[in-house]
Image (cartoon, rainbow, N blue to C red; front, top):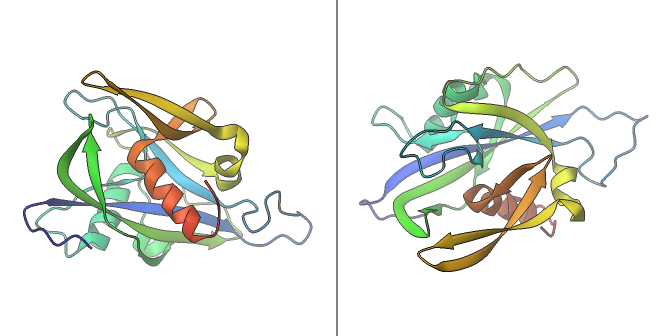
Length: 192
């Protein structure tokens, strides 16, 4: 955990849906089957360095938030209408990640929290707010498929960087979201 009190804190919810096992439907990817992760496309907003990016629900910690878990739960409900403390199980926190924008550290530290939705029924409905242009469940098997791997060329002050990314139906998942999801998938034993 990062302990520098001068840094601002944020939290995101890495929400995975694990459907009830179906003995008649073999898994396309051993161990992952029909598991999916909730991603959002942030709305375009002037001054937002992550405007239009693919992300996990979440945001900055507010003074009234009890802790960073509460931040992830509150932000998820505000952004997509999903009530994590009712609909999901908290598995735990992952390592803190410093946020960068335009190649510079922002002073914001993000803590991803892993949540799991399980069950045979349909997933709870999503109701994106004005902050969210789109919300969707992305199959983990699609992220792990070799043909989804891309590089995003990112230019900062005349320096060109090649950053790893995934392409999901024309949506590029890169940067902080790619970093956090890759770390989580590596913990699960997957190469990303």
